[in-house]
Length: 340
Ligand code: SF4
Figure (spheres, rainbow, N blue to C red):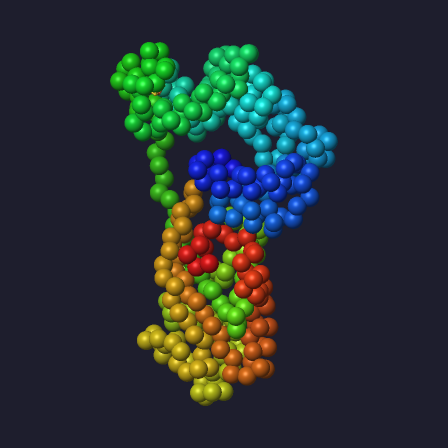
């Protein structure tokens, strides 16, 4: 949970999660939806799925017990070199380095190494230096000290060198160039995606979809999500195309389906048309991507029971229709919090 997430946020999740899943076996047997629900709002959901895969692997290959050797830990899905080193040293007193961005930054500064953190050769260089330094009798304390130093004192910006216990041996500090190390990679602009989020009601029920099992926000629920930031009129056009029952209802009532241009000044045109209410704009920033969203709440108005049935059939082709209670229980992408 602490990968990419700060301790104060995790404190709201960790005890609840551990209470429900106290060992690998209970997590391995749990339904994915339940695990994702307990993770809801914490972000980086691949961590939750990796935990499940890891728990299954531990049960299948290590009799439900976490191994102590870094090489064996590395076999477990979701555990990379940093995690393997951290577990082996902190939990089992093995002299295994745990090299992450904090550790790389500290070592680059200590030795004034002009290295770029993301490069593979940098990792190898720092790993071998940490391996040479790590004490046999207190490897966990050593790694934990590096973690604390990196998060509290040797921070990326404005490191607190005056209070740093290593300042008398830090080359970058002695040169007065702490922030010049490590070298910075040129930043690429964050890609932006535009989305239109539709919260569609038929009566009091809501139309939702489950995202694919791989990729961004995999396995979480979402509302209808269309590419681009659509206008009110464009949303109406999409509705008439995807809910033919709605179009024929409007045709029956007024002789022809309402043209998109008729609706720019507002909706509904009459009581048979869908009620489209703007929910405003919202933004969500992922680590590698930014979503710029606009939302609409839509109430599909059926003039009669027959049309209502057809609207529900149309909606079922787009996703699942759930009751308000079911809706509350679903694990939703936190990117959609503004429209939830
Ligand atoms: S002296 Fe400053 S730059 Fe050097 S390790 Fe300490 S905090 Fe980091």
